Image (tube, rainbow, N blue to C red; front, side, top):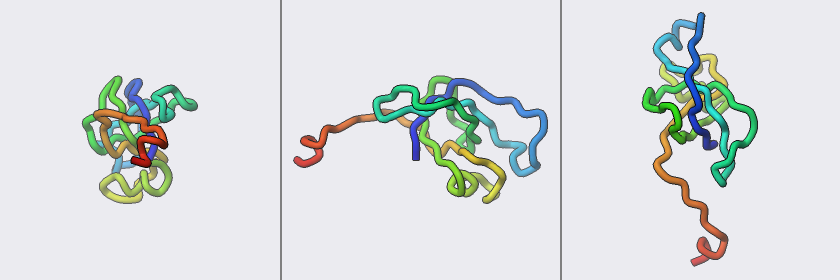
Amino acid sequence: MRLGRVIGTVVTSALVDELSATPFLWVQPLDREGQDDGKPLVCADPTRMAGPGQVIYWVNSREAALALDPWFVPVDDAIVGLVDEVRNYSMDELDR
């Protein structure tokens, strides 16, 4: 899973029937510090809860196709959850 921030919505002109009710969002991938990490991408949003500015976590490849109903629809990236908070711990804190 990867972190990202929703930066917009995508309106499609044509898509397969299985995706007709699925929203698509423009997502900026984030690194562990919450900074931009790479180019924005389009994610299917089966949660139907993410919106602009929301930090989300997403999966890609086969896991993305499994995240939607019905399974194995033609998507590369899919949002699987919303993030309330991110905490970064140092190795010393983890050893306690």
